[in-house]
Image 1 (cartoon, rainbow, N blue to C red):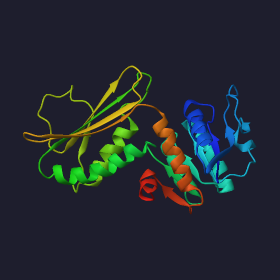
Image 2: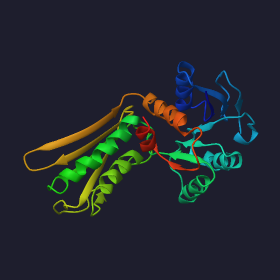
Image 3: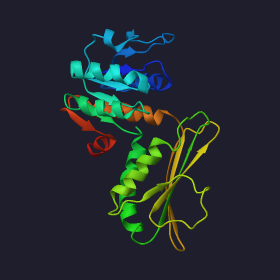
Image 4: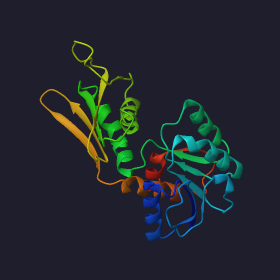
Length: 253
């Protein structure tokens, strides 16, 4: 049984993870951390992770950048592996993440969806075939109207996956409105759409002469990210110190 401390247990993602763990065998939430106490849970909830003394195999974090420093201090102090799902970390915090990975296992990914991470792997193969053949590469990402950042971290991660497969890296182009010129060959256009309650949609377009290949992932519910986080927790429990990502989770399946 993998025992989990859920950091951010009463948020939207935290409640989804709680529901998944209640239904699945082999994983159990033994404690939660959240400053909001308006949710009834079957496990003890602490307002500060420093107050938690419950033994666990792994921590799953779905909070925000402001809560990550205390989490990493706790993880390093107790040498408990951590699945880090919070985004928007500063450069200083990213350095601290790498420091934490020197003494415990840390899994960090721009997107916890198994589908998105499989797509990233497929893109490496596609780019190695289509880019040398002269295909243009464009990424269109769509999210709900409350999302603050653009482009999404996932869109950038997909672009990075394409670049990993190419010997000469492409430049990212976010806006063409300020220039009047033809498209550069070695660029990846990244466009952002914000509207309604779109959970997440990422489309990668390889546009050649007389043919277009599109690889697309659509998330219809945030549950896909919660399921990925639970799979990551199963994977990370008991692992040696170091940095891991969702590609490692997929490779282990």
